[in-house]
Every structure is written in structure tokens, then in C-alpha cells.
Image (tube, rainbow, N blue to C red; front, top):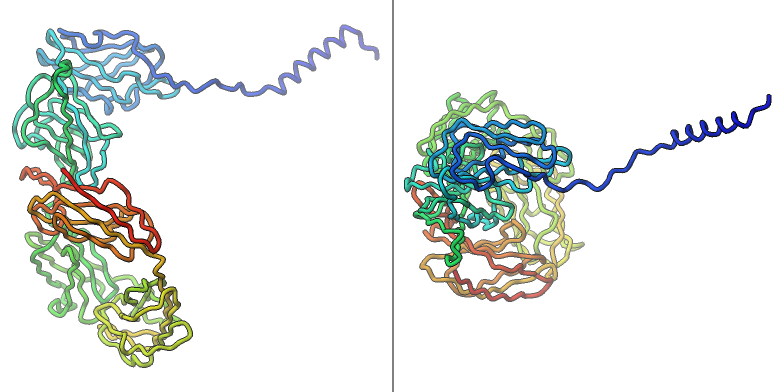
Length: 547
């Protein structure tokens, strides 16, 4: 059938349209909007005076949304009641129930509570100020907040000002002025009325601007601090640094417990224990025959029973200083014996020995037991090898508490092995083991370097605690006086730092602050450069500390 010219054109047009439809692509967007919303007008205007109303309103250049605005908003001086937000189109109204104080400058800081609708860009200027009197207060106070122990800047800390000089203020009263530290730990309180202020820093867990939890961090400046007129160019604006610390919780309690199978238990307290008493209330064992072992800081107590106790439950009454508590321990779950064994008995009470695979060539080789060692039999049957050579262990072997110790003059980079035949080592519960095989390799001199530091420190009449650190790990700690040399040998290669703790009361530890006693935390100093330890090399450093 013939097709007319007009129909042919019509078919071609329809086909073109269909083809075009089939190839449609999603339109690509433009650049991401990074422009923050702006306030075009406000009632009253920013920095208005003689303001008496109970609401302020803003007109924006684009549509906005509120993003946790109530939590982000900071009003200084604070209002008693929460404000109300009302958003309609591009207009935002903020109202309140409070009656504003006369002749007072109010500062509204919105934080990131007001953002644009599409991209969430926060408001370009998040500070709004007005006065209920004839002028704006123009005084200020600024500085930084640092962690007292690390000296690192701390962000999101409230810095709070009180016009009264009362020690109970941070516990009971909301501050007159407050601001939050930025990423660099800096703060600035502006539009202050002239006067002297008591200054605190608070890193609180909840909200409310009160120091009401023992785990919260606090800092304070001593005495009253004078605000500075920000408009007076003849006055040097002082920077006030506040050290943030956590007080030691003097309320004693049990932090945790660990059951050591049926052989013992471990009790951890939150603070050092001076005196204690323990009673077993279920009558399954005699506490007088248990062996108590305290750790160095005397906050963890390990009890080894005189014999394994098979119990469904164990009830203990514990008195630690002025604290009393009762513990109920259920039957411990069975655990497989640990250690490197060629064979393992099914008896879960087997003694468990373990060892490191690499031992420093200048130190002892220690093989650790999970339970106290009471006896070693047939030591002559131990097979101790240096490479292919067999060595008599008699003159180099000993044991103490939970360690088998081999004190030998090791060859560098050498492989060693130790075979302990079946039933040679016994713990206090009479348990022994199957045949044990241990192997290790010694380090070499070139794996290490050494460090010598000649130092001169201010002589305040107290000692310093010197810490050599690799990353966050304390490699060495010792007490030193104000000047001299300190030498570290056999340091693994890498980057180190030096930290000084000012032991002002000479008690051998760093003491945190204590606000009720108006005691600042003890000072901390750092050597301001990293120290590189190189292979088989002695690094020498000189440090003169001036405070």
C-alpha cells in the first residue's frame, strides 16, 4: 500500500519524538549550595538598645529549618524559661515568658540550630545582641581551656562567669554569662557588664550548667577576674587559660570482680584501699587461709584460695575503709587451660604456662603461670637448647610466685627452646601439666638505640616525675631532681616524647585538682620536640625548662 508524503513526514516526527523520550537522562545538578542563610531584617535590629518586648523576629533570604534549635541556643544572661520558636515561610519568631532585667545586655547565640532548608548550611551570623538599657555593655573576657594532664585543647566546654564570690556557685547557681570553647579550645565572652567575675570551666555530662556529677570535668581561675573593655585599644586584652580536670571520687565502691576459676577471685575498687575486712557468709571456705595479694596502686585485691572451691554460690561481706558491700558470686564457668602444650589433659584445673616468642637479649626469659607456683620437680630433666646445643639449666633457673625464670647470657638473634617433661611444675593447688614445649628468639643490639638527656629544670624544692613515652605508652618513669643527666638504654627504634609531672607534694604520683579544697592540679610540662631513636645509636638531647 502506498504511503503519502505527508504521512511519511508524520511517521518520522513521531519516531524522533519516541527516540528522544527513550534517551532522556536525569538532569545533572549544579554546584552544591554552600552559601549560608542570611538575615535580611530583624525586629529589633541587632545591637538595639532600650528593648522592652518579649519576642524578636527575623526575615531570611531563603527558606530555613530548625535543627535542635532549643539545644543549640545559648542566651546570656540565661532566661528562666525555655524560649518558643515559630517558623512561617522565611520568617522566624523567638518569644519568651521571662521579664527581662533592666539595663542589661542580652546575647543570643544560635550555634548550628538554624540552617538552610536544602543543604543544612548554618546561619552566617549566629550572634544577636540587644540591651534593655540605653547602651550595650562592651566588656569581654577570653582565653583557652586545656586538659590539665595532656595540655591538649578541649572543645565544647562551658566557660561560666558569676558576679558573686561564693565557693558554692558551680554546684547551685546558673552562671550569669557563659560561652562554649571551639575546636582549638578558645572561648570569648563578649558584651559583659564591667566588673569582676568568678570563672569556671565545666565539661558536663548532661545539661543544666551545674557541677553535679563526680565524673564531670571542672576547671577554675583563682580569685575574681576583671573583665576588659573591648573598645579600649589602650588596654592589653589578657588571655586566661583554664586547666580542666576530674576530681578523684572519694566515695569508695567495688568497680568489678573476676573469678579465677575455682582457685580464687579478684576484686577491683575505684580508689586506693587503706584498710579492709572480708567475710565468707556461706560457710564453704575459711577466709583466714586465703592468700591476699594487692597490686602496686592498692586498688585491686587478688585472693588465692587454700584449695579449689566447688561452690554453687559464694557470698562475701566486704568492708573497705568506710565502705561496706555484699557480693554474691555464682559458680564460675569452666575455662580451657591456657599455654603452649603439646598435649592437654581434660582436667580443667591443669596448671597453665605461657611465654613470649621474643625475648630481649639483655633480660631474663620468664614463663608465666596463671596460678602461683609452689614446687618445681626434676629440673635436671628440663631440656634447654641454644640452637642445636643442649645447656645445663641448673645455674640459670629459678622460680617465684607466678614465674619460671631463666637468667642466662643470651646470644643475639639466636633461637632457644625449652622442653618441660610431664608433671614437673606444680601450683599451690597441686595441679601440674602435660609435656610443654616453649621456643623463643632473642633480639639483637641493632634493634635498639639509647638516649641521653642533660636537663635543667626550675628548682622549686620538689622532685619531678619523668616519663619517657612512645605514643601513649609510658616506656620508663622515674623520679628526678632539678638538674642532671638521665640515660635510657635498649630503646626500640622509633619516635619518643618526654613528659614531666611536677610532684609538688612529693608523694610519687601526679595529683589531680580538688575544687572544694581550691587545689589546682599539679603542673605538667612537655619537651617540645619529638625524639627519634635510631638503630645502634646514642641520641643526645639538652633541655632547659623555663616556666
